[in-house]
Length: 263
Image 1 (spheres, rainbow, N blue to C red):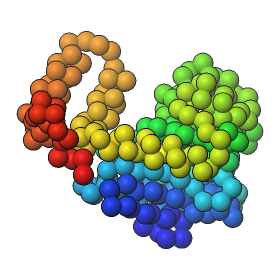
Image 2: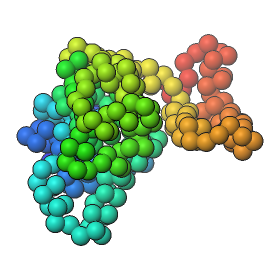
Image 3: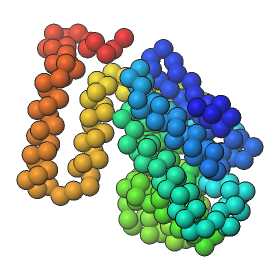
């Protein structure tokens, strides 16, 4: 992991805080930040000791979108270079969205463009009351393309039709109303308190079950309820019941004791 652009801290519970660390640039995206964050997430995905991932940011903003210097370089890219560059950002969003660990976005300050995408890709998003959001791409003659599947999944097509097209800035309460964030808190101190409350709740649950639940959501949110889906969901619950974690969870419930994964 790059200690310059991404800071990673893991506690004794397996809770990792990943902090975007370009405060002087409001954690704006460039190829280095994209690569570092993607690499960090891949490492966490493969680490069985990791239970929960918090995505945070240093400085005044969560992420102000694209770095201006990066955008200047992109202006001279060939079509092939632009494709490779866009694919890297798309892979970051997919990696975060499909991370087999619960994720919580801690949003403060500005979350623009790709910053909105990061919040949408996390399982849970909390924002301070003074956070602001904007899908600003059309102001620059661009579109929020690679983040669009995740943002539309979070806020719905109707809200996306407004904010993709107007590039309005909206506040945290509006972000909560349309489904981009789950809770709005007063300030960053309360952000940490709520994050800890949610983390403690997640740690009560089976690690493999959390991963399986995320996979289940990916499946059922992108298909029709037909015979194939019914068979798939039945197979998933039958399979997890037979796992060691599934058996331990049921035994702990019946015996009125904490399951083994609660330390």
